Image 1 (cartoon, rainbow, N blue to C red):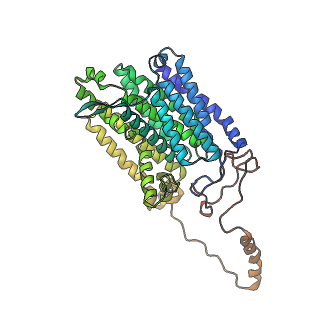
Image 2: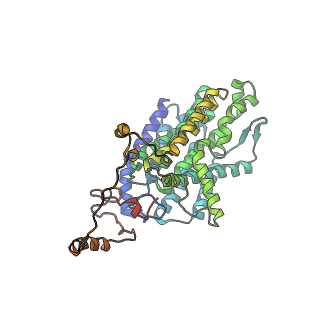
Image 3: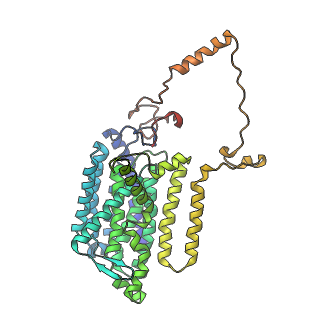
Amino acid sequence: MREYLLTLCITAAVTYLLTGPVRKFAIVAGAMPEIRARDVHREPTPRLGGIAMFFGLCAGLLVADHLTNLNEVFAKSNEPRALLSGAALIWLIGVLDDKFEIDALIKLGGQMIAAGVMVMQGLTILWLPIPGVGTVALTPWQGTLLTVALVVITINAVNFVDGLDGLASGMVCIAAAAFFMYAYRIWYSYGIEAAAPATLFSAILMGMCLGFLPHNLHPARIFMGDSGSMLIGLVLAAGAISITGQLDPDVMNLFAGSERNAVHQMVPVYIPLLLPLTIIAVPAADLVLAIVRRTWRGQSPFAADRGHLHHRLLEIGHSHSRAVLIMYFWSALIGFGALAYSVNSASMWIVLGVVFLSAIGLGLLLLPRFTPRVPVWGQRFVPPRYRRRGPAPEVAEPTDSAAAQAAAPDVLEKAEEPCDGHRPAVTAGVARVNGSTAIGPRSRILDRRTSETSR
């Protein structure tokens, strides 16, 4: 455990320290696209945060290779090298997309090629544990197709959910934490060495997200871009493939009594991980809903819109930070709920706890729909939005020509202001701009109701 924690800390430290220089490089390189209609941020923000995350991944693998116990993972398995090869390819495609906005079909082809590279080096699904049947061996073509499908689904699920500051990195970090606890339990409790690569991948993934998250919290100073979202999606998929399709249930039947019992013991987490992962069920649901919504409208499945789950939360009335925390809550509930159920699937308390927390989550989700009436004596203890507002003061209208002439300059000033909600474009290096785009004091943020640029 100490070596895993050391690898996690080194990965987080390298990612955190490199994000600042990468941000300056992104500004100089012009990797700051104009604000689109579906964006939430209001000022151009540099991308390319995936560069720091990729070097954090390399640092984590390099440190693990020189540790006493984790070195056995590299000696007995080729999976870390397969992960590094696929990650380098998908990261390069993401960097090009962050800078030049390449076509969606080209990105999809790159994702499939990256998955194929990992399959060629041994990181593939060999068999599936199915309840009531046992272990089902897959042919090479079946394993390759299933592996590529899982990688592509996971990458795009993470990419689709990357729409709010700190959302994707935080959700993937929660998913990686739940996955690490499960994989470490398989490796340490049962002594199965085949679970060691997945444990290492999840520890490194947590370090990548934790190191980048301080720079990406609202208001974000830098975005991970496709170079980061596709990278962490591929690492998460690699861990699922490693422990799902390569860990033989026959090894666990020594502890469970039989192969069928071993399969049943692994099913609560294994089967949901394949379609694609229980711990990223929220991004996967967002992905499916987006594809159905766009095809129903006659659009391309890759056409961007403002119909994602985080957009809906903002439309309901949640603030930016509250919407992110709600998504964190549901990801943690699903991921750690599946983890607890895999440890003791016969406990009714786990099911009741998940149901109770789900009810709390629904209450938080619908909170903006309700405005409770707070008595006068309790108004000082609640946020301002729940306090009673007195009648608006009456404004006396000008009755004579002198008063009308006195109010005329104010009317003219208001008339000269732009009424279409647009504002001049902001470029890097201009003084009095938000810290996410240039050096200088933070500018005054426009009213949300008068801005058409919302993420």
